[in-house]
Amino acid sequence: MAKIYIPYGTVEGQTAHIVEYIAEVVRANGHQAETADLKHSPNPIPSGYDGVIVAASVHVGKHEGYVADFVKKNLTELERLPSALVSVSMAAHGDEQTAEGYVEKFEQDTGWRPAHVGLFAGAVLYTHYGFIKKHVMKKIASDKGSLDTDTSRDYVYTEWDGVRRFTEDFLAQLAEPGRQQ
Image 1 (spheres, one colour):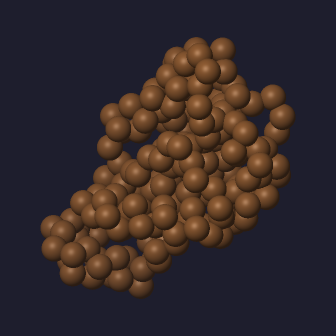
Image 2 (spheres, rainbow, N blue to C red):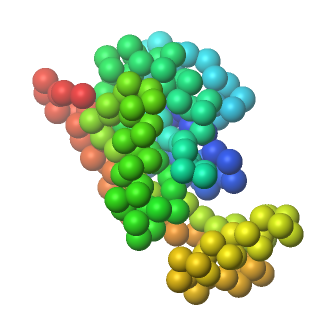
């Protein structure tokens, strides 16, 4: 049984939902998982973990700065342990090249080159936004050709089967003899 640490950063909450789902998949596969919201717990990676999955959302073209700071402070441990990055962005919903660019920038900024990277789409949560943000997000969606502009509802684009497969693949790598990170 492996112990997986899953620190994350989230702005609107969808990354937290994805992280909780990852933790459920880890547990369903007979392992232990602990999540940590880095906004409230930016501590070093605790000892005793067999792997780490760092998750961060992208807003205005960048991952959360406090997640990048966490990665920089824990770089040695992230390079020693099997580790992965989960990047949550709307670009992952149809613009994979841009989503990959966000990860490349994060890697350049932090010096961390995770062997496993998951790109997942987030959500547009119109019902959670204030008046101005709701209309800015509607305009962005409309400008990108999206028909998802009904501000009376939310749109979740996360592909949950992909999140499950990513997590199971990460766990399978942990089980391989002579595993490489």
